[in-house]
Length: 282
Image 1: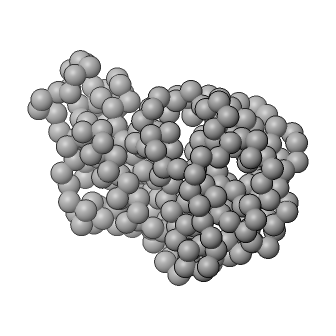
Image 2: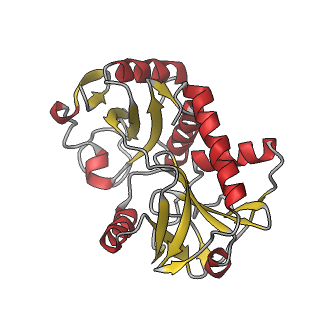
Image 3: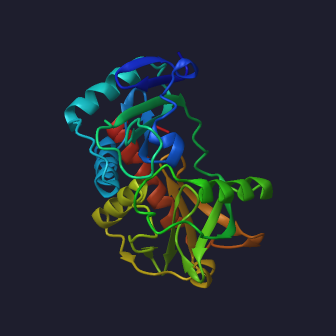
């Protein structure tokens, strides 16, 4: 079974699964989600993803009361129905099904939707490219909500340009990519934008921060301008499904390429951490 779906305890082929038409995720995008890398049947950084999922539920005021241990058991049950290999676990919690009305329904129970699908990870030597895109998302970017239409627009522009990702910015301020974090290296320091309402707290970004600090690599979190980014020694793109990639081009102009050794060291640290948790060498 290549693509496996889950809805409130029921597991089956993903294409055969259904959800209620009146689920609030359909009408309002009233749901939060997370996505986890699965290798050889083992989740990478699952606890970090669940921390973010439960926090998103809290911020969105979705009363998801399934305990973490129970959720982990359901995740294990779902993953065991898949084929193994490299996969993506998708977890979505909706506010529930109710007649269409903007206000929160009083009696609706959250619905849990999950899936496991095959995943092709990019080669670690991939030369990533970015296309700049004005960040027009609403100011709840720290909540991992399914309201992703601006991200879809950015990803579509990226695809049309044949690039890897969108470089999203609010005026001169760097935010992130359509579905990745953007970091930079400058004078031996790993720099990243501050985590506020404009930035999703990326799990891979958090892992890289932890690994850098544990291995004597200085880190700094502050506002970064697009101009500063373009002059960086290296621009880095990271996410659950991309791991860590170096960026060599933005809007057709060459960038980075000035600190390959440190970029490679961070890549090596991340891939070693993935192997330590999953037993799979990428």
